[in-house]
Length: 128
Image (tube, rainbow, N blue to C red; front, top):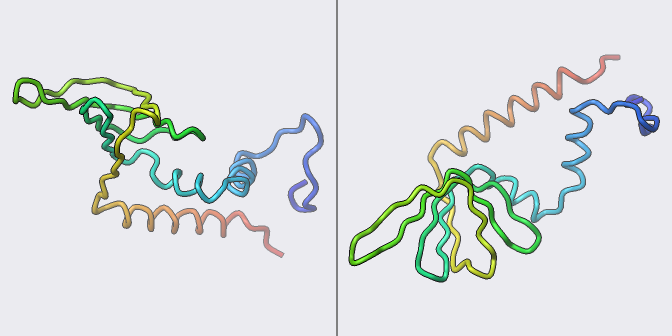
C-alpha cells in the first residue's frame, strides 16, 4: 500500500508513522512554529496585572493559549503572591504579552531528537 503510493482502502488501518507524516505535511508554517514551542515554559501577562507561568500546551486560530501546570503570580498590598492554577485558558483578548523561556538544553535536546528520527527513518526504508 505505502510502497505503491496509493492511498489505503477505505476503512483500512493506516500505520501511525504514516499518519504522523501526513499530519506534518498538512501543517502551516505558523503551526510548525507553534509546535516547536509545545511544552516550553511560557510567561503570559494579562490585562488585570496578573502573570501566569506554565507549560505551553495549545494555541488556537483565535490566539487563545492553554497553559498546563500553571502558577499565577500577582502583587497584593506590596507583596508578591503565588497561586497554583493547573490548566488555564488565556483568551487572546486578555493577553498583554507572552514570553517563552529558552532553556540551555533545548538546542541540544532538539539535535538529539532529530538524529534519532533520521536513524529511525533510515532503518525503516526498504532495501533493494
